[in-house]
Length: 402
Image (tube, rainbow, N blue to C red):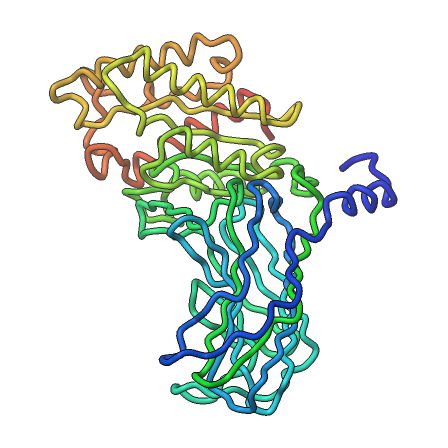
């Protein structure tokens, strides 16, 4: 942040770094037949507590009150019916006390995390039926991954994604309340006790500091931005634009099937790229309806949300919408589309920012996109995305984007 001294940054960061959860001594828990996981403690966390890009420092101490192996513990985040395992540890038969310490670095959109062990040493080995494992493990997509002393690994994912066209399923939405749960699986006839659990958040707060290149560009949208119909990473329009403008870093966040509200939600989830970077938005196709006023009203509401969030001076380019061949039968949606595009073009704030893709692609009689540009009824092929790239590139030049 320009003009912010090191001392001011230190004070700001301290204001947002705090203990968000802690649990003291719990008393002894005894193993059951079949060694099921039992819940030792559950800690509620209010929505919005965990900021984007925060680091969660998870540390604790377990007392193992029997000198045998074959049991373990796990820490997980729970929201409704969804749960994500964050940490799994396997106990060593020779150790009576098991310390654990992990840093969990969240992404700005809080959809995944990177885990790093702060435990200085591994206190022995634990056994499972599959063989010998490190005592201390973290979770990667809910599967235990070996984590050596001070080791690091890709950590848990808090959202899942299908194969393209990608559908996103959010497992833990940190904007809403969730629970942190510690569980132990103990062999029958044995017992254990949690002596301490602390989770501290280290964060710069809800608004990140932007150190990206001035030309860094956030490309937001649905499957047409993701590049469905093309070879992703080869001839989708974002890749082609990056090749056209090699000095401009591009982030493709397109996700198939998303309505404009969800697209804007994801932009608002990122207080750095979504707020400060140049933004190319192509969304609203999945909100299609034969009611043009309703369709435009939906888009207008979401554009107002977006522009209220964007930083002063942040640059935005908006692509208008293309028809799907499926809309022409019976035809109400296809008939509504020109009115929606016209309302966007006529808007005093948003109209000057519009890249008119409809004009360069819906060129067949009746407003159809030629088959030579399409991979299916809606999505484009590499040739069609090349036309999109050229149109966006020309609009960027017209707007004065280097």
